[in-house]
Length: 330
Ligand code: PMP
Image 1 (spheres, rainbow, N blue to C red):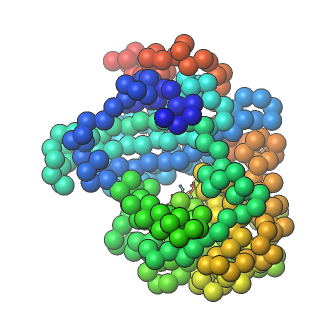
Image 2: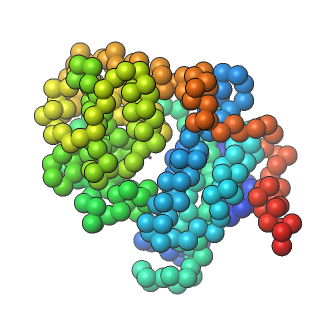
């Protein structure tokens, strides 16, 4: 069980995690037909916790569901409250949030249309995704033998559960070969992204990242970093580049909710820049931290305060405000 995850939000109710079990004949378990998000909440400099860009993440969840034609049984507002409630219920101010929606039990064929759709939100404590030293020393990456899927093979703009087999294969391959992370190319041979991160390179004062015309996930951290970098006066370009451009970059880094801004110090056994996190990467890491922790007040709109954190026991099995409101309406 991940640290701190004692209660989750399942179909509108807060339930103890050990009671939240899945029928083996759930459609999504067999065919991967589900969508999910990865979101972080941060302890704020002024006290309390806040979820970083909760609205943008939930909008992406709704869009992922639309791409699959998966009808979500809860509204954006209910899921928004559900995310905050699960943090409160677990007494977590700083945590990782995992909303997920999936096609459940019923018919077993690939084309089952009428099975019930379930939604859950879990939260747990998750430190540095790529290891404790990743953020300060950087990581070693390898160009994967697995490609990011062609957009007519997989719905690359959606965060779809089944599509992550590709990421898991790439990650495991890199790991087995002694690297920390995989970098996937697209079907045209351009650098696409990591197994769970977007990628950026720096050359001089110029920052470059693959454009959204590439088959990449539209990363919320990617978007935040582009915004912060431009505000700091950097030129940020979004266009394709090949692996050799990556090899000769001054700096390179991954962005992702879990990975935050992780410097890349080596790609395919070639040292990037000096082999240590570069000055641009470090400045962006600092700016990102100021934004997520509420120190940069001009980015307050990116933060959804969690509200009062209760002890886990006092909220278990109590209806969420959204459910209670629905009951009142009924
Ligand atoms: N690409 C992939 C394949 C991912 O899984 C993620 C993590 N969600 C990202 C990029 C980064 O996206 P975000 O910054 O929204 O977490």
